[in-house]
Length: 236
Image 1 (cartoon, rainbow, N blue to C red):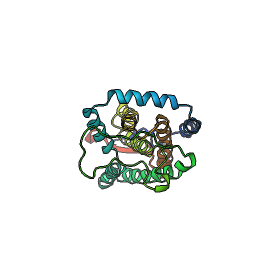
Image 2: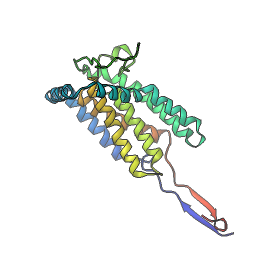
Image 3: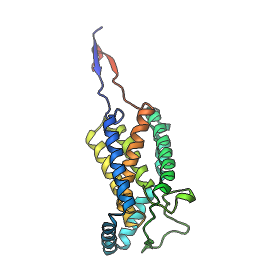
Image 4: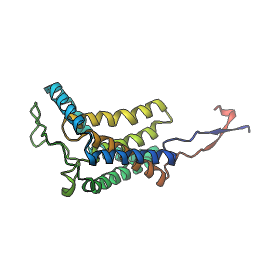
């Protein structure tokens, strides 16, 4: 029987280099310094004025729907779905553990930076369902008054990183596009709804990447090179 050796390439998301993790952490540190010093306050004012100018009932509805879809509970549901599927069970468990880790770590980081939420309250231009509320960024009372780093974006970044790793073998372009576009889209909804400052989103994004990268390495999600022996008599 003729046999052929097939080597499956490693997944760069599961095998992310330590240098990238250090770069993500370094950017988070820089963002933290900017957040504490408040040097971007004028930029926040410009963003707020711009949002007030473009607001409409349609945009309110669209962004409320988008931001609700990214609520932590919905990301966790995706994790549970992945654990049900045998092929993605391990990654689903890693996603769930990562999301819980991000939420806990962000919650305890917020009081250390003590950056308060934007002072403007979002008053929707559309009538919302009874008892409907936008998800708060923190679940613990001691962190609910603070906005840096953004738990919403940290969770979205961690979620995007793992989804990117899962989809990399099928489309590397989709992987990188999702890693960037999903958190950016969610971030814009948070600005539109006056839930966060811009620097909250930057810090949250890179904090989420650091946690996700560390978790996939610690939990050994690496898609190790596998050698498949294929019977050439039955085709590739």
